[in-house]
Length: 237
Image (cartoon, rainbow, N blue to C red; front, side, top):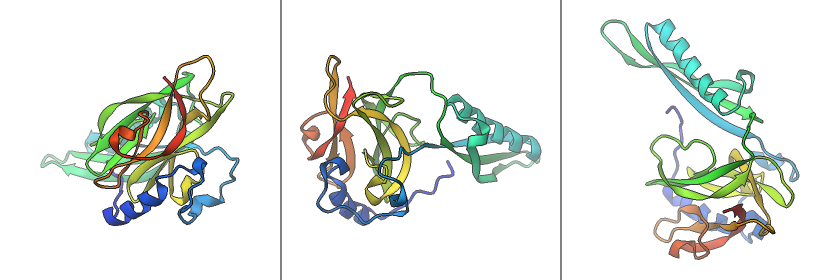
């Protein structure tokens, strides 16, 4: 809602070429390190999610409702109020002649949310300029394309963390906590480094669209007819 994601399609396309090979496949043309490169290689990055809230009525009531709505959404995902900080607003987005207003706020919640389920489904979403795979909520304007498989919500034998990152507004998944030198978004869950014994699994591949050099993930080994970048790991089927 209040997010400020913008970027150059040409630059994103150039960087996408460098990012097409996943970090665990040792890309030859790795991007330059970013501020997140100072993270320890062995560290596990946090879950980091934005929540927006809108309230209406007289200003004081509208503002309180906006904060409450955002923090209620955060609580539904397992975050406490202490894990969240206000990053935008309160801002009046609509004013009516009777003095009533709509107020918007945005919070960023970071840490380890309380999660009761042992697994999450990884879904792929799309809009014209981006494809995003996440176990969390997709931003407004993204359309659901379907599930890619299931991730563990905590570490299990043979697994490694999977992260959501972005380069100039183009989202991609990686097992590198440093996001291959790009911008960290959140942790998605844990996937297997190799096919697990005794359970059904699917490969999770990084792919690149021919026409616009947009990065996306797929469980089809031919990357749905697009450019194959390599295997990130294996998700539960």
